[in-house]
Image 1 (cartoon, rainbow, N blue to C red):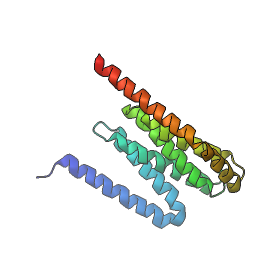
Image 2: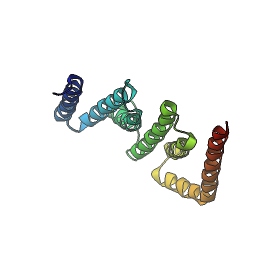
Image 3: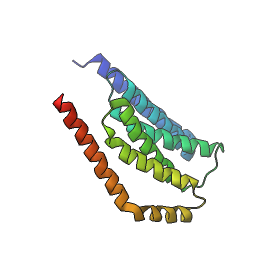
Length: 168
């Protein structure tokens, strides 16, 4: 005998997938923004529900940022070059890491990749051209030793906090 709650979730997922395929079939390539946004909202609802998995917020953030950017570009609300899509994707991943911390409090380790991705995304969005962004990014990686030093410092701080909590 199957669980009625499980059947309900399966029917909801089948309905969502069919709606997404319908959006893409009706709108063609313009439907991708809608489809990604709807899927991102579904992952948010699943992640924030009472028995949901909060780790679904990470891909939900990426899909919402990506789908929202496609919709804004499609309706000419914001006009940006196509190479900015990568930066929006990196920014969505960075926001996803930060959101994981706000929901789960996984530790401060999520700030390292999240902050780096947001910094790289912000630097690219401020650049006037893809060539200038590449020059800025290569110049940034000349300071690789600073990133390693910050990572080691982050590890030492997190280990000290764990040991202090164990002593209490």
